[in-house]
Image (cartoon, rainbow, N blue to C red; front, side):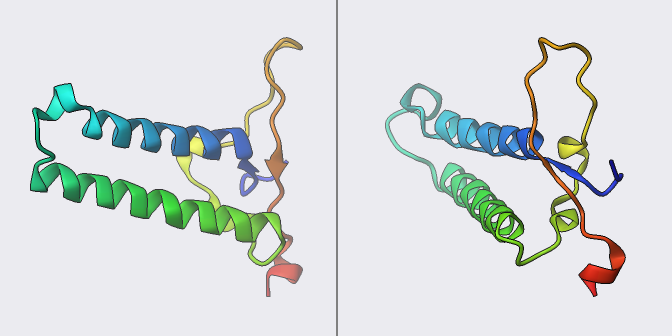
Length: 100
């Protein structure tokens, strides 16, 4: 495996956390009766970032961009510690010749 490879489970985990954050911001008990303007900006920012990541992920899955463009600390590829660990899908970074 290359240090530029991407864990799909890690990427999807981050997107799940982003959506959970939006859900928490929209929870009536957290905001009172109205969605404040500040919370609305936070929701828009998180949804915009998640949308951009999903589009980049889609492009990597269809081969339009090098999956290495998705690389971040949260989607490092790690070896399973045991057979009971969930399996992961690894997006392989392109070799340098293909990326040019």
